[in-house]
Image (cartoon, rainbow, N blue to C red; front, side):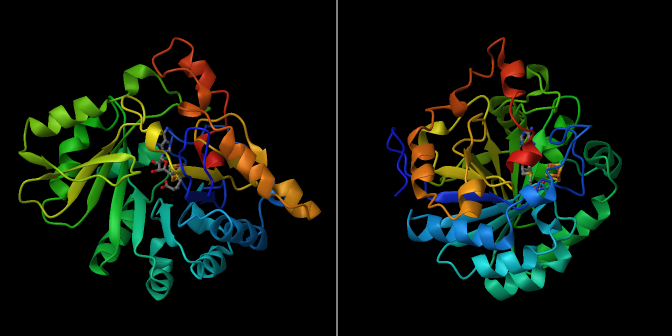
Length: 326
Ligand code: SAM
Ligand code: SF4
């Protein structure tokens, strides 16, 4: 078991398959982004080797594939197929642009739960946020996914003055669709122009929804990051991921592997453990993994509270989100 010094057991591994992406969401990817060189990315076999060790030696029972955009890698299909043979719950977070090409594979291997990012239901605004023009394709793929019976969560990063006027539209979407909308508080990373004024808090989101709808609280998963609700009589649900105003570090069971083979014990941690070098040099990397988890900070990767006056500069010192793997 991967237990840290606070007794938290880490059984959920998030693997970033690539830092590249076919969108350029301004809250995620810096304008002048530099991608990792190809030779520093974990190969398919290296990803499988690391994943196998995490499952067999460290008790990991859930793997999420993310990125960048995980469906963009040329060998993503082979990676997914191989990982699906491990005794884990395999899930994915994607921007949805290429989903239609993967539905048959997901059905075949039993990958049932898909998180899709969609920050606006307005095509023009969507184009402004993503700096690309794929809204219709994503919308269409969501329709197909729902019709095929996948369990679909839609991630919407709420930003004041940008898309916070759409909260009710997203909630209304859950009326007749079995869709799970997750409102995410805007988090600071390198190059994403974060500031407090743009954060719409958990409380504000909930107050706005409660002002219009009668809602009920749903049970949350033990290590879950979101607080789930449902409008009375609606088919779908909604939840809020309150990383900023109500962090959930106490129950954290997640560890991250970046596309270039660095282990991060926290999304915000500025310390990384290099697994790529030992892998390529044929050195047993298990003790490095244990040390990384053992040294995990209690909260926010050991950085200051978000409202601290130095927060913006401290959080901007780390990697950008596409390079960490969300
Ligand atoms: N490309 C995929 C996607 O967009 O779903 C996977 C990678 S993306 C980095 C993973 C998640 O991180 C997405 O749901 C995205 O909305 C979220 N994300 C990115 N930047 C964020 C930020 N600054 N604050 C909150 N969530 C963010
Ligand atoms: Fe790409 Fe996802 Fe980041 Fe948007 S949120 S730029 S889709 S990695």
